[in-house]
Length: 419
Image (cartoon, rainbow, N blue to C red; front, side):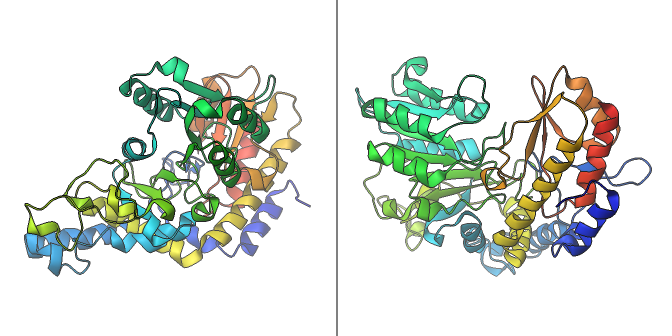
């Protein structure tokens, strides 16, 4: 049983096998040199200290070799994206054939929908969560309009029930059962950005496929946070960013998954560029397009090496500790956080994230009645970096790689005084 004391939090940190990872990150500090209480890994992860070294290696090789760095660099640039594949595949539970790092998240979603959103006059609708991240909503609306459909009519929102914040899988099942003949695609966030709810990805795939709908997953708030087991889930495709829980830096490249069942289907419509052409004949030029198998067959251009170097620096840390250990600590961190929040003697606070740690990412969304953004500003003034979502929710993500149990304890103590 948890205890609401500083000594207890510090004891949990002493018993934590991953506590050494914190020292491998730069923790922002206040004007007095004290560490911030940083709870926004769900927006931008902190910088690993080894990132600079990884990027510097590529800068040095660029200076030393110029264009020959594509072949002569310590980490040759031509196949550089391949250096990331195995580690990224482990993080999302995929086969290496199914994963590639490229572009940015919404760009990848559009490229994937070129292939997997093939509407007809009667089967054209798209299902998303009612409170999906806005970029996803804009993307699917624009896809509907691009294909000549009315975005309002073609978009189906999977909503929580009246008076509830969380989605129920049986409600999605009902939507697809009743309207599946008109639905071409389900595009669902694996972890909802607002509530932190971790949805049953495999069940979503089963529901969609039962009515011959394609199923895609946005893992922006899932990759490096949960273990989505994408291959076993059976979803057709997925995409995610790397700058949140994967700690790769602002605006860094994204990841993409295409299930093995589509790997060798050259008939799938797709946009083409020289980097998804057969790598064996890519430089022969003037040849008909010959698409590569697997996820690499969705690439268009050669990769930006400096961004990939930052991703590699982070992925090497994930490779060292593994997702099972990180996930176990995450569940314990949010469990302790939830316990402390529930100890606050007030009826103004409500956690809208699922109480079952297995059904949430490493995030708690704390709803505060009669609050406005001034509460968030006061937290910031106390060097607590959280994320505010209108109208009254503080999103907090204790990240297992660098957040401590003491961080959680101190944050809740300050929140108490502010309330």
